[in-house]
Amino acid sequence: MIYGISMIGANTIWGWIKNFDRVLTVDNSLANIEYHIPTMREEVLGMVRDAGLDVELADRIVQHESWWREDNSHLNKDGTIDRGLWMLNSYFHSEVPDSCAYEYYCATKQAIRIWKERGPQEWIAYRYVK
Image 1 (cartoon, rainbow, N blue to C red):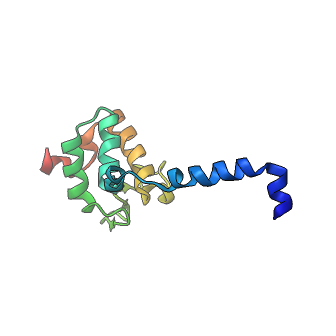
Image 2: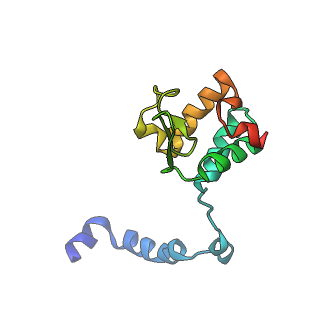
């Protein structure tokens, strides 16, 4: 230990010790900082807003379709399956794999693409919530 001090110098060590209290001092005003981690719903609606689509309509569509459950599914009479948060149909949206349809971020990107290509009437819920 003494060898280490002689190599870096006692003044350097003393400078570190003198400044050490400044490193550990926290201004009390900083102690009140709170961080907000966005919910899935906030992230999805933010993506919709950033895409320039109607956020309130998207909120109502997802609420009506899946109740904001990304693991939701529905077997239709014709044998197709509505999948995930946006209930992307396995036949009409076969380009969207299950791994994407059941993951909210990926599904929202696909829903935005579909909405921009075909409009919000692509979802049955649109008839009820427009």
